[in-house]
Length: 329
Ligand SMILES: [Zn+2]
Image (cartoon, rainbow, N blue to C red; front, side):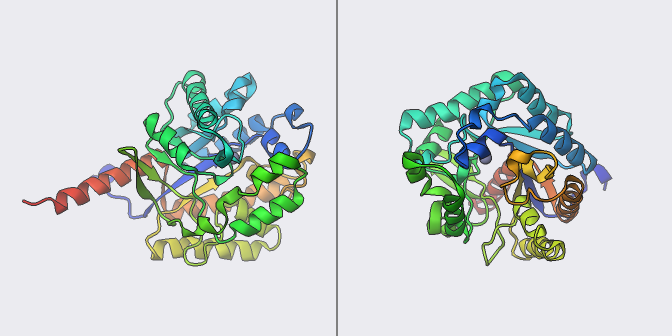
């Protein structure tokens, strides 16, 4: 058999980046000056493109529409096109992590506005969406179906959602109405009832795949790279052993992992003092880049990593093959 058509022995997986800018983190922390924050997107894009290029990993970049209003940030996002395989997807216009409190018009504006901005600034039509703060109300799904999206990726089925939310609320300086809205962040205990593997939804006669952010099979603790780096801040040895076990467990349980990166995963403590409060931001740059390279390399060796839309195409092909097998002769 020709090597180029030989089936990859590694099971499939996907990789994405939530390309959140510093202003989004500062606003979530309740900082009044968030709107005047400098952007770290050019620095983060350069490091991510270099790392993913070196490791030959494809990626889906979830873009916040507001950043496409800035030429330098648009260039930074556009630079991901130098990778062999990249997909741009929708991460809302203003990265407000309380979409579950918005009315229909607001939700439509958040999603459709970014859809148009990506199409006009990057020249591609997004087919996937991830809600900020892993918020996924019914109305969001209806808008995605209307815009002919292929998938949503807003589910984070973790057991630590209530703890993560409690920590967020204890640390943020958000007040009043905004703090009230944030009380439903991460979906609470209900989040854990969601599957830890892709599933198909029917939304107003359309088919929409849900690709959850994978958590540890069985215990449902997070396993994405930001969490790995947070653990590595406590013990590198323990973090590496945790990630190795997580990937092994995904293989054993037939769970197709979908893991994500955030810009702070490639930024060290010397890069941005504004981010010092953020978990994992006490680590020096060189140390962090070495760890994230190790984790990504391990991911790429264990799994056949794809963009999320490639994963959806494989899921559709599998579903079609299954239908054909089940059809009466
Ligand atoms: Zn985000």
